[in-house]
Image 1 (cartoon, rainbow, N blue to C red):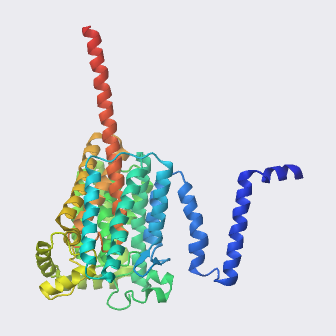
Image 2: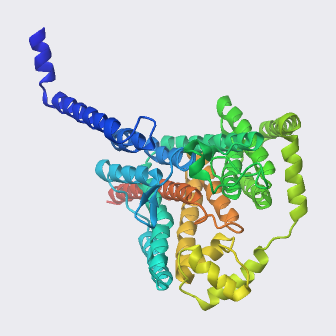
Image 3: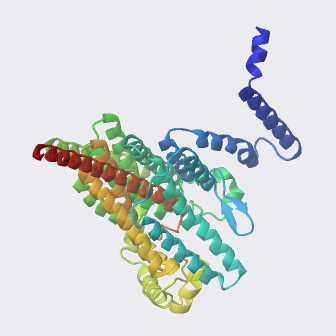
Length: 500
């Protein structure tokens, strides 16, 4: 028996495992004795993270590869772990590291899937215009070069990375639908986190330590409606605009009771979170996106009764939760919305931003450091951004970059609509409806918020969903076209035989 154990452990793969464990133990021993302790964040960076990254690289289920970076993005980065500084100007988050790991895994394990016509050209133009704007912004000095490079990597290259992950990863309807469901659950968790922050006054970012969030908003003062996993209440509300209408599709079209129950709870919490967050734009755009969702709902007598029951449950649940736990914050939100009404500085900002765009057709640079001084020069007002994704993109990438981005999105939407009409699979139809409403929610919220560059959380999530939806809809259309060609060929050959 002893000899058999020796033979067992003398095999190559076990020797490698033993060697790696010895090396790991030695490094951990040296670290604990000379540098830090188990409570230090660097233990996570150097000893725990590589283990998870290795598993992610080797893991076979593609939907997990897509979801893992999104989970880290929403619930870990800047909540538990801060971004890591690389030089004086650039900070890299673990989400980007996870994304690069998935990117490498896809290249290593999967066969590359062809892109639609013109998409490569549009992406190339989009990045080229961003680089041109970077050069324009960097001409003012070395410090401008640093921040422009940082924003190019964080927002534009990061967006393309996550688009690639989404496009090349998902091949079947089952994985696509799992991502849809998990993303919707992420919305539920986000709303729960926000409600927790508001009711307790605890900023979730405090998990990193007080010194790491000293510049963050104090929830006990005028910024009571902030907090949660997104930090920025407008970015969080934009997430809901993308999710709630798709949740209605799950509620009315899904046959599983468990999914319907989760949908009701998630929609209820997200609506409450939006109300107490007092985001006027989000409330408006949720309503508009819900109108779009009506085109995807299976409306019949049964669904009407379910809808009536859902509305009753929603109203009763909201009244119960708000009346017992959130009345104070709900009253504050009503006062906030009433006080602001339809007034907004956006009209003034937009007026002068249009003048800037007219005079800078190639963009002014990729950062608020480039835009804000020019806005002050034109309008004598200080603002960090135009408070519109579309104006922000025009300011940053010029006309050509703006048009390239819009054409990419329009291409994806057209593919989704065509694939939705072609497929007869209910799971595929529900998934296509969800991603369509997710994209339209992003586009609607972009009217009043610069959500492409205001925070990379939405930017990366949108990149993945855009890539997944374009890829899978193209696969459906290609499969349908191949079936048509095959049928035509068989009929054509049969006709030749008969005539012959």
